[in-house]
Amino acid sequence: MTNKKWLTVMGSFVADLAFRTPELPVWGQTMMGSDFRLGPGGKGSNQAVAAARLLNNITSSGVRVSFISKLGLDPFGDLARNTYKNESIDTQFCFDTADHPTGAASIVVHETKGENAIVVVPGACFHLTTEEIDRATKLISDSSIFLTQLEVPVAIVEHGLKIAKSANVPTILNPAPATKLPNSIYPLCDYITPNETEAAMLTGRSVEGIADAELAANRFLELGVKNVVITLGAQGALVKNSKVTIHVPSFNAGPVLETTGAGDAFNGAFAVALSEGMDIVQATRFGCAAAGISVTRYGTAPSMAKRFEVDTLLLKK
Image (cartoon, rainbow, N blue to C red):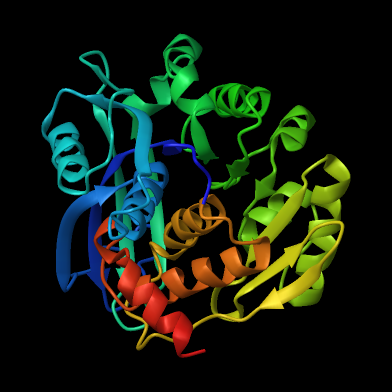
């Protein structure tokens, strides 16, 4: 375990409005749904919750999760604040704004397959500034891991990664949702964790299985990333760096109810594992186990596993 105090996540909060339907509607179609839920979401926030649930059960670790973001002064923002209070997440650099509303996501979930379609309006968190991130420099520099995603502006993502790298803090970029990135961002990434769709978009090559994932991983390494983990859903994940190429299988924790939070569960758990000194393969297994549990539950943040659940699942395989 590192002696640093913080596991820091920078990213988005949006309120998730989830609708379950017997079929995913097509454009122009109105469909009667079977269930509706409102809950906390956003990739950064979900990953912070995932990490906090895995760390908060280890009272001797002394590590806390800190979340950097921006929230509106509205009911959705209050939902976020209550979530972080309940999950014991540090919010000293989760900024408030009266100028922009808190973001929201519309999630349509197939009620039997668990597949989903999502529209995200990031709202307040998309108005983070470099000056605000600079105020968190000491926090980032004192972190065991710095984890970020792409639901805040790319310039903010790059700025945060630069601060972490300058302090020799290991960095994880979860490039989701996929968007075009400047080549300058890749050398700032000690770890990059795209899924198949994101890897394909960023590398320009199809990723439909383990062999394709290895070729895409080679491209990320060429761009300057040190370690690549491409998540492959039910196929697990492909791990590649200059020393190792290995496929890590997924974990079956029960019937799949919803896949929406799986990627965030993986990334939060992966960050925790690395902060505890696990190597990249061990950390990937840990992340796959957390993701395997999340898909057996509804929602995003509410689906995140507790530490004893992940440890128990790992012992079974």
